[in-house]
Length: 102
Image (cartoon, rainbow, N blue to C red; front, side):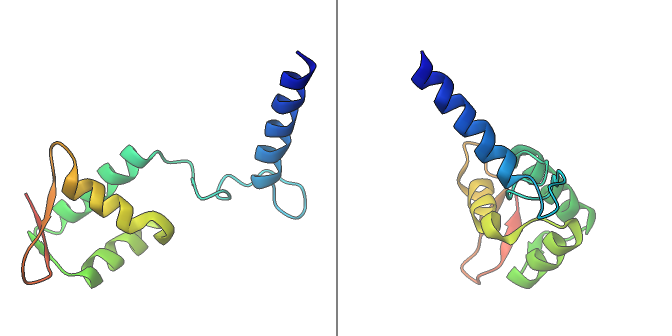
């Protein structure tokens, strides 16, 4: 039981350390999560793409939209791949290298 309590304490300390800035203040933007679930990020991204009234997008278009939404780039292409290869894909990549909304 004592070992399990030690593990819980270690995990709490680790999470606390990741989410605090150098002054010791809680910073929700740290840790790469930015307070949004991956599902929410995908929805926000797709909604923003649809609002452009385009169906074809280059990588630069994606970068502009993601920068406007302040989406972190560390897992951005993973997010795009999930939108392409999910059970119900929302994007496809054409032979021309552009991305298309389905």
